[in-house]
Length: 145
Image (cartoon, rainbow, N blue to C red; front, top):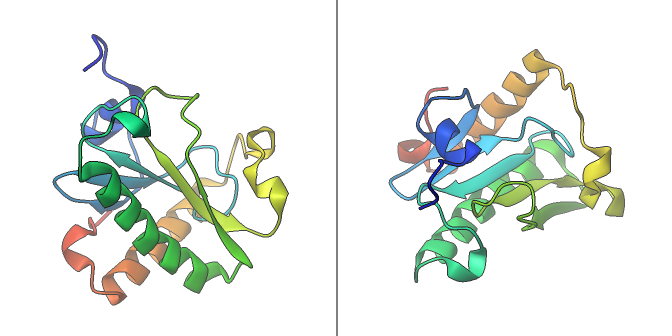
């Protein structure tokens, strides 16, 4: 683990607020503060792993399984032609997978991310994903807020 906790660990530990849509013993999912589209979720392991190739056996697969469950809800809620899945890893040295609706290749351009998204709209997006996950049978992993 790094000497200083990553910003994601601080969010996971409640030191920094986050809009959580998923939480289990290995992984969390929360909305990006700079979304590339509505409902942009980051799926992050609780364990501080720098790169996806360094994830312990089983952890990366679990991250991807959660990303797939969240992606299915994003597809159902926003009906985009594709659901983006991206691992960049340059912003924060803590493994995270971006999952968001994509209407074109511009959905992968971080320079187009919203810098000041509407907070009420963000909460509506989080609740739509939570409700979709509950409806899909993942209620045990869906936090109240």
